[in-house]
Image (cartoon, rainbow, N blue to C red):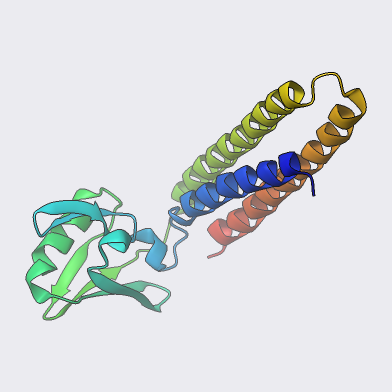
Length: 183
C-alpha cells in the first residue's frame, strides 16, 4: 500500500474510532457501561472521565441495571455527584459499597429523538471522512506534482478507502437504529 493510502487509512480509522465511541454514548434502553464511562467525575483534587480515572468497575448486571463498584469507597459520593451532574437522565442509588443505576425503558418519542441524534452524529462522521479525503488529496497533489498517473491512481485508492468508511458508518447506523427501536 502506498504511504499516502496508508496514512489516509490511519486517519480514517481514527475518525471511525471517535464516531464509534460517540455512538456508544447513545442510550438504547439497555444497560451498558458506555453510558457512564465518559461521565466527568471530580475526585482526588482533579477531574476526568470515569473510564480514564479508573476509579471503579462498571458492569451491567441485567438489561436494566448498571452497577458501579468503586475501588475506594471514599469516592462514592464523588461518583454519585458526577453521574447526577451529567444530566444523562440517570439516577444513581448508593447501596453500601456500590452504586446502582436503573435504566428506565425508553418511550417511543424518546427513541425517535435518539434516532435523530444518532443520524446527526453519523452525518458528522461522514463529513469528517470527507475532510480527511480532501486533506489527503491536497497533500498528495503537492507531493506528486506533475505525476498525473500517480495522482489519478492514488485518488482512486483514497476514494475506495473513503467509500469503505462511509459504508461502515451507514452499517453502524442501521444496527444502532435497530437497537434503538427494539423494545
